[in-house]
Image (cartoon, rainbow, N blue to C red; front, side, top):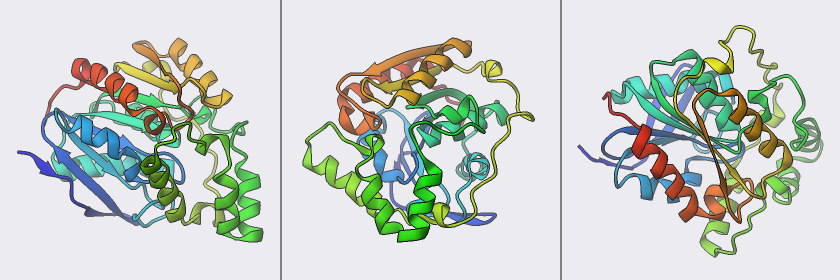
Length: 272
């Protein structure tokens, strides 16, 4: 059965999630990064849905989903969405902050996740307590609270992590629309407590095949995290996307999509 990709909604404790379900076959779940939404995956969903069932959703507090942003709750939402859709095993693709959700889900729901893709992985995967050297959240929070969310949006649009190398007008318009939709509620509220990994299994216990993707011009902290994870995870491949920054899937979608497809054709197995 092929799925049509229209907007759907799922009520979960504390939030209403918008999601899209496209294609047919082995399930692939796409997790967007901070300040973004499910549309960031438009070019990937179109390519992957020729061979796979592609599920993507606005994480709580982002896009058109309600609720308070939370990496912990996001991991639970992945499970709830899979239960709702009858998915018993899935490949999980997490970009930037979404990579933290992907890793947490793999560590807490190992039987659900058949393989992982970590794109521009967050340093929070390694040390969730330490400040991110390339993402000054406290400064952004102060800016948003002092001068409003529009001031934050203007500053964030100039940040290296949102800089696009591509000159494709439609891609630039897509990113502009995503950033304009970001409500900034997580900046205006009390920040989520530091996520201790003490109660989680170690990263080395992730046995699922894992692909780590990083743009050749991504920020240093993401490239460093990718290298560390490539050393620590037991079954891992590392792929660098040429002529791409942090938003590698938008900067160079043809190369990015080809890498995803090569990996998923080998490691996305149906259990639905």
